[in-house]
Image (cartoon, rainbow, N blue to C red; front, side, top):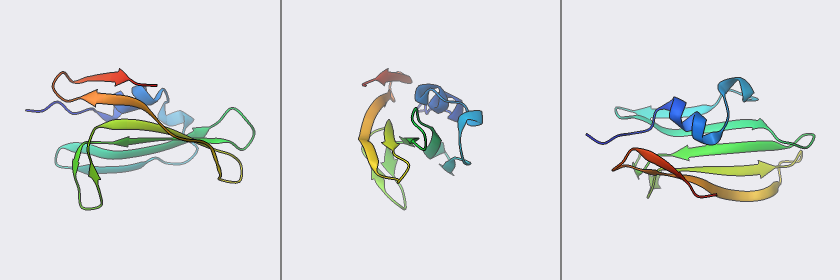
Length: 102
């Protein structure tokens, strides 16, 4: 069967822990496990927020994802983009390994 990332692996790739999150993460699961995980942590500057988004490859009721990826987006205190979503990691379903693409 296909190897799929666990929540712990996703957090490791994001470089954060649940304790860092400024609000409860958004998590969506199906019979195969996690398919969406969104976590927000404080940024370097006052009021800045860094949002990490994990999407698992597949077709879901809400969306379709062509790969299993982690993106990082930085917002300022007004909620505007400081940095557009940046693709930071890609999961290889054959090997069960993550590749940093940042």
